[in-house]
Image 1 (cartoon, one colour):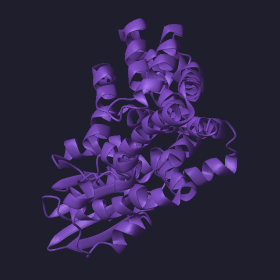
Image 2 (cartoon, rainbow, N blue to C red):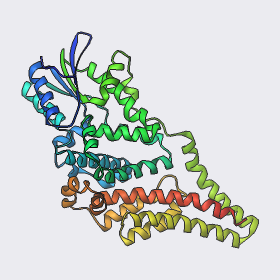
Image 3 (cartoon, one colour):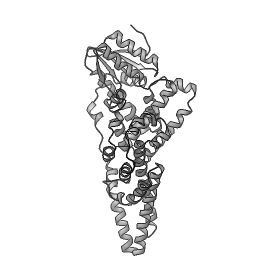
Image 4 (cartoon, one colour):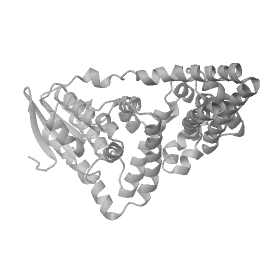
Length: 386
């Protein structure tokens, strides 16, 4: 039997499972995975991938199917942008290490097919993980997350040789998620702990008697710790309801603003009410426009953001970023080459602004953030009119 400190034998209800922790993202790790599968001739090979990551790995041109209008309409611009940033970080680290990210997972899939084993995807959908994390975050935490993802690009260029050796001790995506979990502790439960539970449950219920499971080394201790614990998988796949406080504020703030302006007209006269409207329009418009400008939007898109923000900030059902994003798509419609170049463009910060697809996502996110900030800045300015 192939001996390795990264191979662990565990059992569950008559099933024999070889749990392989990919100790480093390299050919050596991929070779170990392939050798164990060849030796075991398992019924099933479990890989730490969800369906969307699996399809992205085996279908190079999958991005060509992206419907940006649908993404904006379903309020998933930030989620898609975050996903692309994670993929970019993984790709840049892989380039520094001289390997293709996910090489051991690809080898596991290929070896499973050669051995005639069933491929079983055991990770939770990355979109569900990011959505659950998103629900936990307030506006300030979201801003910190976006900033941290952007900072990660620069950090990659500063990685020293000893840092690269440390990076080889864990899966690249796991490294970034763990880093985010340390910087934003409220996210650790969703990004790391919940997935340990999920992986343990999916591996032990995989079909077949002989199973090989390939996961990032960072998950092995958590899987072993939760191996015999009951896990409610369905509960881990459900999006938690939106916070009641945020749901209340979404409607309460517009009502308060309208009431404040009405009180200004009634109590202090037309001039005071007009000044309130002026501050509301200026603060919302300028900050939303600054967000669109920061994303290098088309001049007409910037003007749209400026004009839409004072109105959309009073309507909980629509956001300035969505309007600006749709206008940008109309003015600078992404072409086939943008989808073809997307895997390459996300490898640099400049590429995110250069590619029309990611630029639209940046416009949506940054305009919405600017609009929200403008609304909060406007309130004290309006109150001073009394």
